[in-house]
Image (cartoon, rainbow, N blue to C red; front, side):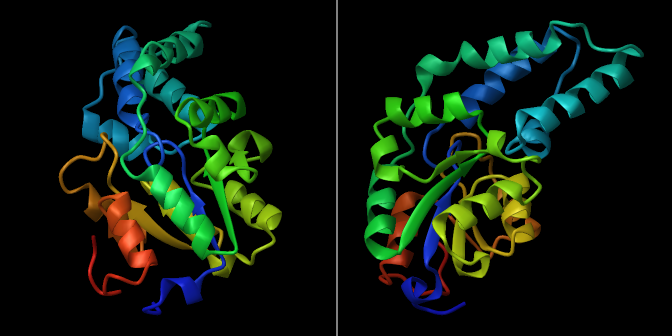
Length: 238
């Protein structure tokens, strides 16, 4: 990796949930509570490792498989809606991840382009960013996996975002908080840095992201900003 990050990339692509807004821990709590009503129980670590970063289509596909294996029958018709209700009940606790606004400003000032590539459904994605005061900092290149055929861990949303940015994938740096997101960015031919500043990141989670292929793992936006500003050695993780 070149020591000067600014010379290595033309664009930074941020994930949203768990990178810009601290929504993953809230979603996990609400979803796990709802799933418990269906007799599906997961530890927080298991849930993060399996499901965080997935687009809802693949998320519910896997949950329905789990339900069938646990109960020997198909999930009821209201299964998906009740899990989504569990997620929605936690929205009032949504917060910005510390330093996300500064990271967006610095990235915009440093690189030719910035974008957001998220597994969130489009209306939720824009709503979260607007509510947290981040949308104008990230716009106009804010894209949901609703726009592509396959969500993360497939590369489609990152490939789509790079195309809209007009930047070659090899010149894109991705900041991701999930194993599924890391795999998606790598499959798109991009460099991926892991981010463990979200409330869902348990002790040792950085090793999961490194193991998935993240070239570096940063613990906060402050650490990310220091590396981008070339104030930190390229060999020191934040």
